[in-house]
Image 1 (cartoon, rainbow, N blue to C red):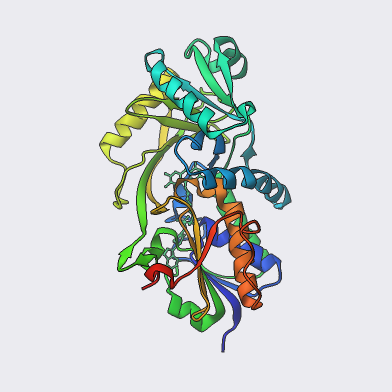
Image 2: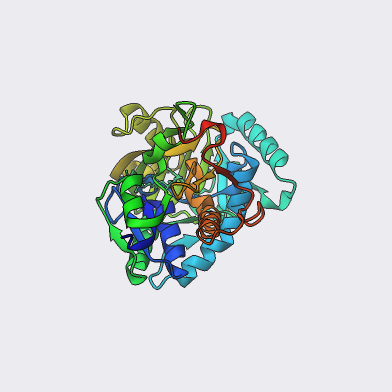
Amino acid sequence: MKQFDVAVLGGGLLGRLTAWLLADQGCKVVLLNAGKRNGEDAAAFAAAAMLAPTAEAVDATPLVIQLGYASLPIWRQWVNSFPTPVFMQQNGSLIVWHSQDQALAKQFSQHLQRAHQDSSVWRLWHNQEISEHEPQLAGRFQQGLFLPTEGQLDNRQILLVLADELDRLQVNCHWRCSSDLAECAALAHWTLDCRGYGGKSNWNRYGQSRLRGVRGEVLRVYAPDIELQRPVRVLHPRYPIYIAPKQNKLFIIGATQIESEDDSNLSVRSGLELMSALHTVHPAFGEARILESLAELRPTLNHENPEIRYDKLSRVVMVNGLFRHGFMISPAVSIAAVHVLQALMQQQSLPNAQACYDIDVLPVSQNGEGN
Ligand SMILES: Cc1cc2nc3c(=O)[nH]c(=O)nc-3n(C[C@H](O)[C@H](O)[C@H](O)COP(=O)(O)OP(=O)(O)OC[C@H]3O[C@@H](n4cnc5c(N)ncnc54)[C@H](O)[C@@H]3O)c2cc1C
C-alpha cells in the first residue's frame, strides 16, 4: 500500500525545493536523503550560492543564463516568505583584475558584450567608483566591472530553512537515509529523483553516463578586518577566484573547477592557489582564520544544461545537471520539474516549453537513456 503521492529521492538543494513546492500544493510527500538534515554531503553545502547570471554568461550556456535571470525574482519572493530570515543580498558584484592582467579584462568584457545585448547589466568602474563603493579596495585596483543585477544567498541558511519548511508542511523526511528508485516506488505513486551526482547511474546513454561530477573546492574564512559590500571576482590567468562575503565576517573563497570525480579533501595546491589569490586582494586576508575547506562534486550533464527526464511506466521523473549554477537556476528548474510531475500525475499533456522555462523534458527511452 503506497502511503505517499510523491517520494523525493535526494534532499540537497533541488530535492528540498521540489518537496517544498509539492507539499505546499497539497501533495503527500516523503523525502529520502543520504546526507544530514543540515545538508552536509550535498554539493549545495559547499556552494558559495552566488546568483551571478551576468558574469556566468562568459562560460555558461544561454539557457542557463536565461534560467538564472528568471530565478532571481523568485528567490527574492521565496526568501521574503520564509518565517526565518535568510541572508539574501542583491547588491551586484564586482569583477577586478591586477594591472598586469588587463588583457584578460578586455577578453572578459568582450565575452560580456557578446553574451548580453543589454549593456546596462555591467558598468566600468574606475578607481574613484571602486573607492566609493568598496572602500577597502581603494587604490588596489585601477578598474573594475560592476554587475548591478547579481546577488547571493547564504547556502546553509537556505538548506536549513527548507528543512524547517518541510517539517511545517508535514513532509515525511528521512535524513541519513540512502535509498533507491525501487524503495521509493514501494512508498509512493511517483518518484522525483533529485540525487545530483548520486544519480549518475540513471543518466546512462548506451551504457555510458552522461552525468559527471566536476570537482569544486572552497575555503570558508573568518576575516574580521575585511568589509566587502558584495561578491568580488578576481580575473587571473591561473587562479581566478571569487570572494563571497556572508554575514558575521564570513567569506567563502572559491572555487576550483577540476575535471575529476575525486571528492576527497582540498589539495595543498588548490589551497595555495586560493589563498595566494585571496591575499593579493587585501593583505588583511592574511590574518583571516580558515574555518573550513570543502570539496564537492557538481552534477554536470554533457551539454552543461539542466534536464528533466520522465518514465511513465515506472512513474519516475529525474531532474539533474545543475552543474555550477544550482543556486542560480534552481527556482526555475524546481518549478518546471513540479509542473512536469503534476501533469504526469494527472495524466494531462506535458507543460509546454515556455512553462518549463525551455528546459528539455524528454522520455527516458529516448536515445537509450535509462538503460
Ligand atoms: C564548491 C562549489 C561551489 C558552488 N558555488 C555555486 C554558486 O556560487 N552558485 C550556484 O548557483 N551554484 C554553485 N554551486 C553548484 C550547486 O551547489 C549545485 O549545482 C547544486 O547543489 C546541485 O543541486 P542538487 O540538489 O542537484 O545536488 P546536491 O545539492 O548535491 O544534492 C543531492 C542530494 O542527494 C542526496 N543523495 C545522493 N544519493 C542519494 C541516495 N542514493 N539516496 C538518497 N539521497 C541521495 C545527497 O545526500 C544530497 O543531499 C557550487 C557547487 C560547488 C561544489
